[in-house]
Image (cartoon, rainbow, N blue to C red; front, side, top):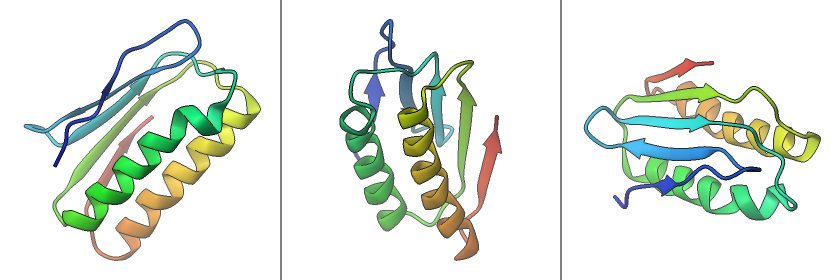
Length: 95
């Protein structure tokens, strides 16, 4: 599985996946010009990860501000993890 590592910018959060702890971290503010474009590779990575793996994953979110379109994208992300959890995959969320 490819790693995920997007650096934090003024308008986007840092997004990284630590393979050794199976922890996906999103931290920082999120108000990019196009939230859907920013979150697209994250959602694609999550889809691929959840499709390949059945092991536990931890999601850590520390985002003090999200604009409305980032909130929609975050809900899409959370829906994917909820579906995985409903199908028996261990998912731990730290918000």
